[in-house]
Image 1 (spheres, rainbow, N blue to C red):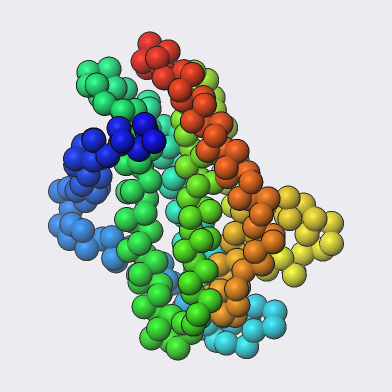
Image 2: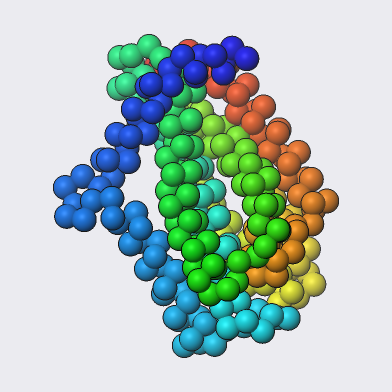
Length: 263
């Protein structure tokens, strides 16, 4: 509760930091914040035109023209949220080293700023994706409600891992470089571009060990088939998310004093 009270007391600092980062992203650009809509919109159009219309790609068991582009977008958009949270979090203490040395504020405000910025970016692109589903008549129906617990689980997993990496990266700078490479392999070891059913049995077992497999396939079940996720398969990821959050918080509390000297 002490952490929550401290973060609430500095809510103005958090809100101001989120606003400044968002504005800085599009400063000096001619179209400004319009790029937040144009970038994801162009991505959805490209995936739809290339895979649905040109390549005629299909998902096994689904006849819809847009099935593969919806399958691809539901995986890539949600993976993008995870990648942004973790990759930004691993560098957040290093990027704000001057701020940490000069100002006194709860250091845990930084992961909150990273998280809120990632959620704003995701909210914009996800809103456009939902609009695309409505226009094409592919909105999933009641199963759409399952997106909320899936997002909560994914965010908890991402921020727990991100804070852990962020603390470690202050003391061991190789951590950031290594995770950048790992993230590329992790993407292809997650069934985002291909369906799990298309893999040989040995590869299916390997992919099932990936904690994000159950999360991403949960989104894909919702958006391509209108079905609820397999809740039981999400349990190991939920346990891992709790453990990572506890580990990240413990590492931060034990090393927050030494971090200032290392920065």
